[in-house]
Length: 297
Ligand SMILES: NC(=O)c1ccc[n+]([C@@H]2O[C@H](COP(=O)([O-])OP(=O)(O)OC[C@H]3O[C@@H](n4cnc5c(N)ncnc54)[C@H](OP(=O)(O)O)[C@@H]3O)[C@@H](O)[C@H]2O)c1
Image (cartoon, rainbow, N blue to C red):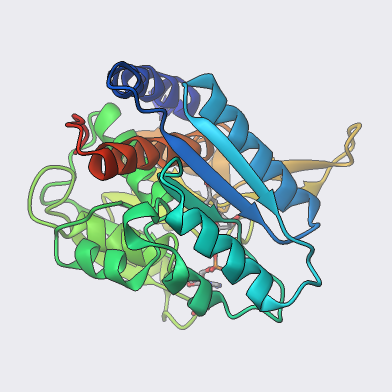
């Protein structure tokens, strides 16, 4: 029997735990605040930002939203970040990526106050993560860790193959899983576009985590029996429905399910966890900045 890992249910459970921590902040007179900054008119980016804002409101976090014209100069974004960095009611800041071409992405990531960098992408926070002293674990890989934990999948001693080495998923995922301690202690192989014989690597794995952005890059023929499969990919493919498209992952779900002991679906797997862990980081940031003890690792 293959377990379908339900990211919605696991995310809901973690959110209700978070509500308790938010209440503790409210009792101390603090309303945690998350600022989202959008410098784009891409409908997908607009949707992501509004989903994050709605999720904030649902658990008592104050959502602050700022929009900057996509053709504005780079300084318009930095001025906004100056305000948000200095604003004591803002505990977390998230700049929705991608930003337009005239804006230097690396400079933006470095401009956000590291204490408010709830994405965990500032080099100071990346360094802390690698050193095993993470302040903010990036939301998607942290969400994957929590999915594995909630599904009783042991990472200690497991052979994990990660397909994809992006700064937001693959690299932090590998760094989290090789850390000493709970949710870590794995032996990790990271694959990418230059990897020779991907299937030879994935077939060895106890856990396969795929974050590429290409539907069906991993299928059942590339997996061994009993593997745990985590599909991070989200891809739009044409479909005969009202919207004209549907969302699929990077893994060929049907053939992978035949081999897997547990697998995440798309949608409804990793996606809901990403927003949940962003809320987690915002609550943590508020606790830190306001010097209130919060029970979140
Ligand atoms: N569910 C969520 O919350 C969530 C969050 C973030 C991302 N995602 C989704 O996850 C997917 C990946 O996102 P990302 O931002 O990590 O993507 P990305 O920055 O485009 O990175 C893709 C990675 O895949 C590798 N790759 C490309 N072709 C490959 C191949 N043939 N074999 C092996 N590896 C290959 C690339 O290798 P190179 O480095 O060599 O180019 C790169 O490391 C996307 O579908 C995205 O929408 C979902």
